[in-house]
Image (tube, rainbow, N blue to C red):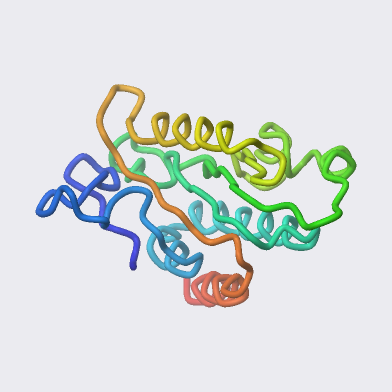
Length: 187
């Protein structure tokens, strides 16, 4: 599915208003290529998506290949119209499966730029958080999903909005980089 168009409030719609019980709802499942094609429409947005692709490549290089990412923040809104400014970063929560036998604590300690939001933001322009399916109880995963869905399902002023879900699988990341690079050449 393509990234949904912003609604009249400049937000991703939380649901299909024509069919409010449809499965077509937030989080909208899109590919990383569809994310680039749908939202990397300005120089600033392309730079931010470039950071997200670098963040994903760093996770992939460590063996984190399975899971998904929820993507949101001002990047997923028409902030240029709403606030007369570009987005400054992209918010991302990565729900992942650690590779078997990985010493996750050591990996986190040696890669703080991937696992601590302030470092990820400075390095990749990603306000990034991680939920590891293998290290969390099902109850904790459910609580984390409910938390992020609740936080991201509304603006700070209480307006309901949607967000995106992209697979962590790197299969389409090369295509996304090519699309981003092709747009850079054309721009």
